Amino acid sequence: MRLLSLFVFMLAATGCSNIEPWVKPYERDLLAEDIMLFERDPVSTRYMNHVYEAREAARGAEGSAGGGCGCN
Amino acid sequence: MVLRAVPEVVVVVTKYIFPLLLFAFLLPQTVLATILPEERVDMLYHKYDGGGVEIDGPSVLVRKNFADKVSVFANYYVDMVTSASIDVIATASPYTEERKEYSLGIDYLNDSTILSLSFTNSSESDYEADTIGVTASQDFFGGLSTLTMSFALGDDTVSQNGNDVFGEKDADRRRFSLGFTQILTPKFVVAFSAESVIDEGFLSNPYRQVRYFDSSSLRNCLCSYEEEEYPDTRNSDAFAIRAMYSLPWKASLRAEVRRYTDSWGIKANNAELRYAHAYKDNWLFEFRYRRTSQTQADFYQDVFSGPEAFTFRARDKELSTFNSNQFGIGITYKFEQQLLPGLERSTLNFYWDRFEFNYDNFRDTRTELPAGTEPLYSFEADVIRFYYSAWF
Image (cartoon, rainbow over all chains, first blue to last red; front, side):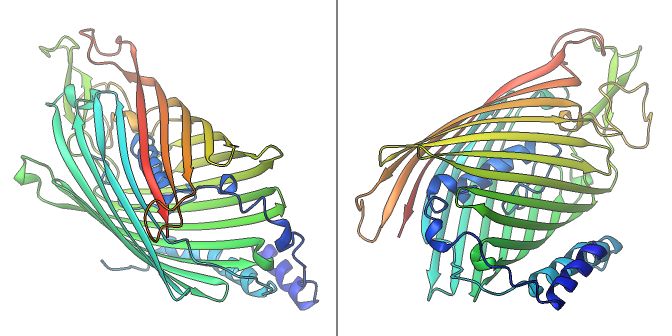
């Protein structure tokens, strides 16, 4: 991680950080479709994550906010 | 609720947060419009039915924006539980329970940064949980990249119905998460997530028990039961990669893998594949398959050799070695006309998921066989989500 920070710092210091966005806004129409959202409906996703957390030992990195469980 | 400077927090902050903040601020700020979440209302009915457990209830989410700068949301959620699960019937009676959860949150948009604050209260007769969370989200590269950092602090209070001597016991939970989403091509997006969770306090379930061999027992299993005992700390790390690809026929493919490890010795992997297909202008179909496998906690055993055989002991099937398969289908219908004044559009959604859980070292105690010779336990569960969403 220190090496990565140093690398990024050196990139910035040498002026190489001006990377242009390679996908232009007018090329993002497909990405704006609802079928391209990782999760379309938060209320539905949040419920499924609760089901997983109650039935499995694993928790975290679900890609959406967690909350109190109360999984007795 | 007091935030204490524990060593783990310092390690996480210095090891992960500072370098990422450095990364964030050194990147070019050529950002296009970062926007708040859409204004919407969702009304959901959910039902879980399997393994002797039935849980259903509503969830209502409302989100409203102000001056394109501030967004607030509120969520009300209820679980109505009727449980006669295999964990319960071995040593106790079936029960009914209700859990209510309230969440409130606010998002503030400043240039390309969204700062969020949320509070959640979960309440049932023997469990109270408060969680406060803060999130910072930053867009880069003209919106091609998004970095998200979150911290949540949970304060739980555990009690036991029908046992006043048990009193109230506390558990503190701290969650740190990082997310990075990158648009790679006009058709391809990837997202990386990492989350560490630190739990301290009473982490056992006061109702669950372990069993041990006892030749003098009058039970057919020739075993007796005693209280389980968990460690009072648990640290876990989870990493996930998700990818979304647009297919040429108005469809998308979503793939996900996640790896989980914790200080209790549990390792888990899950992988998921989703296919979403838009049909004509109004229909959307989704198909999902998810596979999970996990190894047991170090202190888990189906039958212990004797009473208090180890300091820590558990027989929760959630801490055993198992795998599960999930198959799901979803149907969405989009209403393009305004159903009510003020509504831009709305959808009606129905999702059904079938779970199969297969346990490798958790046995079915409903048989009258000696402990350790019973067949391995397995069960199926159906999960239904039926909801209406409207944007205004």
